[in-house]
Length: 192
Image (cartoon, rainbow, N blue to C red; front, side, top):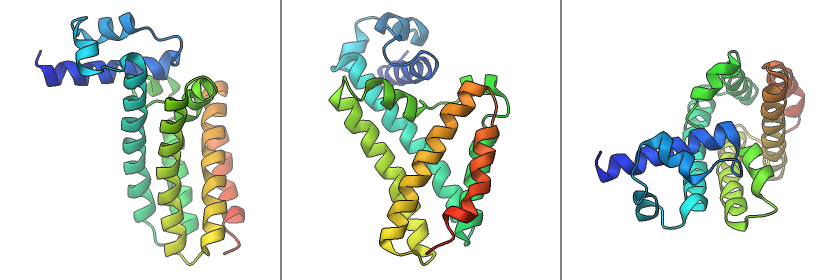
């Protein structure tokens, strides 16, 4: 395994384990075992250890999700349709809950809730990632004629609705909460 492959395997394994078990329940030895990387390579690639791995997993997840957000928001000119289709796409990820285990991302809201009060670096990384997504939402809303102030309120609301619905969908083992907020989009976007 090359050094690059070793690093990528550790990051993939950490992301998957943080997704399944959370930050605090994931041990460094588990990450090494699942990645197949030699023990000494962890601190070579990630001098900050588990915390650096988590921060990079959050950043990677954030970028992957931002890519999905861009694709779905750019596909439709109408803001209501764009946001409804984005939420429909997210809900589709929950049609098979066991399929969520295969997603290459960390549930950001859950990881933020777990670490925000005890790890400032991870809190900031989560905040930056949420900010990146909000910027995409704001950009779409501005493009559709919403005022800056209204676009900011809607984008924060959208993050809260989606993240809360993701948590409920995981808890209830259904995509129902996401489908319900999809129906709220016309009301949320009714005032420019």
